[in-house]
Amino acid sequence: MPCILFSMVMTTEELLPERIIRFSGKQNDSAPCYVYISSEIKRMCQQFKDIPYPHVSVHFATMANAMPGFLRIIRESGLGVFINTIGHYKAVEKAGFSPEEIVFTASASSDELLQFLGDQGITVNLDSLHQVSRWRLLCPNRSFGIRCNIGDSVFPVDTTGGVFLGSSSRLGLDLDEIRSLAGDSDIKGLHLYVGTNILEMDYFLRCYDKLLELVNIFPGLEYIDLGGGFGVDEDSTGVEFDFKTYGEAVTQLFTKVSGAYTRPLRIIFEPGRVIGAVAGFFISTVTDIKYRDDKQLVGVNASSAQFPRPLFYPEEAVHPAWLVRGSKLVESMLVKSAVYGCSTYSRDYLSRNIMLPQAMIGDKIIFGNAGAYCNSAHTQFLGFEQAAEYYI
Ligand SMILES: Cc1ncc(COP(=O)(O)O)c(C=O)c1O
Image 1 (cartoon, rainbow, N blue to C red):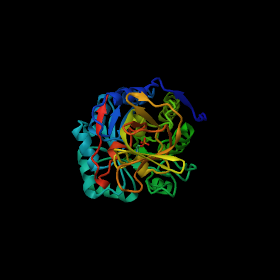
Image 2: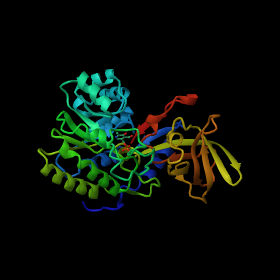
Image 3: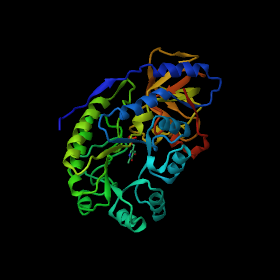
Image 4: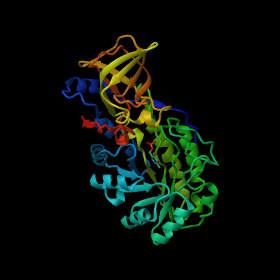
């Protein structure tokens, strides 16, 4: 396999924030809200559909965004869905997805849930030897996939949200457990989730190489599920994961592996963050300003309960922000700032460290990269309503 190093290209669309600034200038309502640029979501879906390998199915990971408007666009774009809970099953069913369009992977699933998934005919990847034995009992004639933790054969990288491979990950079957199932023709898929928000293409490819070494011990394979984890540039500088080079690399790899196997192997992708993160923005209004030492503290009419990524990932979540007055971007000198929410919770920050111009009451603060793991992660803690959504 060729060694492809970190590689990025400029996006074709560089004016997304400007479109949102115009939108915010026309808003009568100052309630915090999310705004999505639909064409950008569709463009990201298309990146996967353009992968030249002929046997690919793409399932959007709904944990990144299960809001009805978002799922509608995913459906219009011709993608399936990847779910991990019954709650999201209900959401995707309501959005019109049929069982054949759904892939399910979770852990510690109850017998009731496994039975339900089996009865629906949903593609299921199981997380442990125990889950495999329960599945056989509950759904005797149904094939399944297994989630592979190949961490002992690659050097696991600590991606946003933790390490997903190796002995410090709770997920999947380890190599010994996988090998103990060798020869089992009920196993129709191998599933791998490398990690999240990864821009380093080479790490994906190293992991795929190791996963594909297992193919020949399973005679009934139909698919290899490569999960998600495709990264988004946190600084919104307009660079993005190089899907063209990636698509060519996986096509080459899977053409070769399928040629040596008994039948062509289908690739399943489960992208989450990369599909909607850049397309989504969160708009709040400045309601208070304080100074502490050399830092400007900007209070807004929103909460981290409504923009929860910084709450869930305080170390990793970085969101670009723009300060807008009327319908104009404020471009004066930047000062050290924090943006805090309108609650009494001491950790209610939408951003702890950010450079912003001097703010004024009534200004808008627009956060970028807000289309994934944001509105659908809304928490009822603190009593804030879920923010409204607009698709433009
Ligand atoms: C199994 C699995 N697949 C796909 C995803 C989506 O990942 P990402 O948003 O990093 O693409 C996740 C996220 O946690 C996951 O656990």
